[in-house]
Amino acid sequence: MSFDSKYQSNFQDVLFDAYRSYEPTKIVHYLVRLVKSINRALARLYVKDEELELAKARLLLYHMCRLSLKEGLELLGIEALTRI
Image (cartoon, rainbow, N blue to C red; front, side):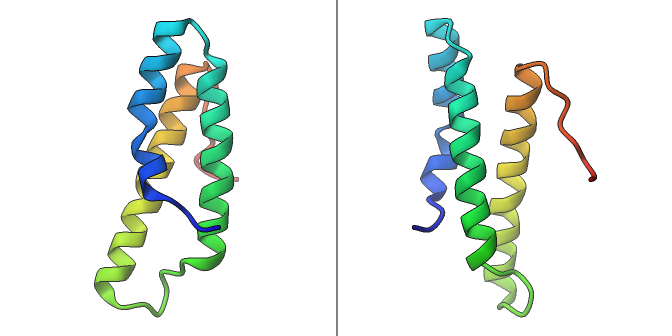
C-alpha cells in the first residue's frame, strides 16, 4: 500500500468534522493514519536521483504532510518537533 495524496487533502474536512462533533480524537486518528501513510511513502518514494519534476512533486507532498501534522498537533496543544 502506497501513499494516497487524496488522503492528505482531507485534512480540512477532518478538522471541520472534529469541530462540529466536539471530538478532537478524530484529529488524532487522522494524524496517526497520515504518519503511517507518509512513512510507507518515505520508504518507497525517493527524491534523490529522481527526475527533477518528480523530485519536486514528492518534496511538495512531504512538505504538505509536515504542515498538516504541525497544524494538527498545535490544535491539540502539542508542540511539533522541528529537529530530533
